[in-house]
Length: 465
Image 1 (cartoon, rainbow, N blue to C red):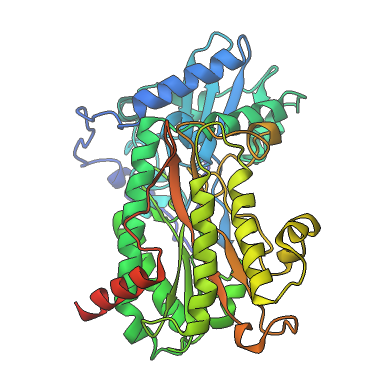
Image 2: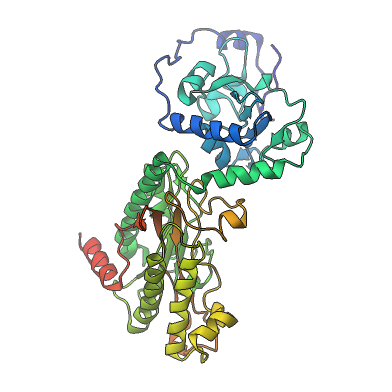
């Protein structure tokens, strides 16, 4: 049997004797008693809803392919969120096809046999001895509760809607159609409302993230003595993420001092000082790929200075005002506007901006000090449902079952001469995860304190334990 193997240039030749020897003497390790993934009943409902939206059409959703990090080393694979949402499968190079009849077939690369194949011990990219075991077709069907077929049987002839930009080989095999963008949009909008299973996964992610934040606080004394204290704390959180989940849901932001004013600071190469605040924006991704997204701004000394507390309290008040707006029927943008109104009132009261808060809301001058929006949908992606239409998301209204973040901040740059000198270099963000309920919203991350007094007490208890 001839096969194309991903072998390295330094591989030693395989003799006929060795090839024959490698085919024999293996125990049967097939698992005939696998239970279905807990998500399987939910993925079936999601596939049915997708088929009903595009009746009589062929839909092609790939999982994605491996990407080289350097030379022959790949990044750890992370499947496309839409594919995971519809299948529960997290393997590379798989393809979900929903036929015009509504029947769904998962085409995958099953575990290679030990007889008639050298892949299992020679292929550096897919071989079982190199990267671990994949399920065979029967095992995959038991896990995912969907008809499974070998990827080699996949034919992409004829018209189809394709989720593009995920797998180049699939893109090349199917002529681009005008309906592809509509499929991508619907796949994003499907995820705006979370089902019970998803909310439970997100709650686990939030709870695990809370434990990771506790780990970080306990590690602060040791990190203060490190040349790259930010990276020390990043590593501490990353350990929790790998122990309890798949990984971090996004690159952790561990920003001390003025680094907090860089919204996506992920270099994390700074030294820590007990005089500064630490902005920690991090989330653990579950094995099912749902992520939390939480931010706390902590005094590295354990207590806020008067100026740090002044800035922190304004952000806290802005976040509290935003959370109060959350309920079904409220506009998505309402919570951001509520937070910004409080920010404008504070900047005016401090004398930083002279115009009235109402004028500042119109002119947008306050955005010099808080340049981004105050939250987003959360789920399989940290910025979930990003391809949804504006009228369904940003310009839409909140509905029961949506999960989102609320994260106002103030970013007072070190070189900003419009600010009193004592404010310069301080950055504060507070971010929490909430699920919309029938009459308001539930704070999923309530296990982490928000009020400055509570933050100080929480840190003191952790550092003394």
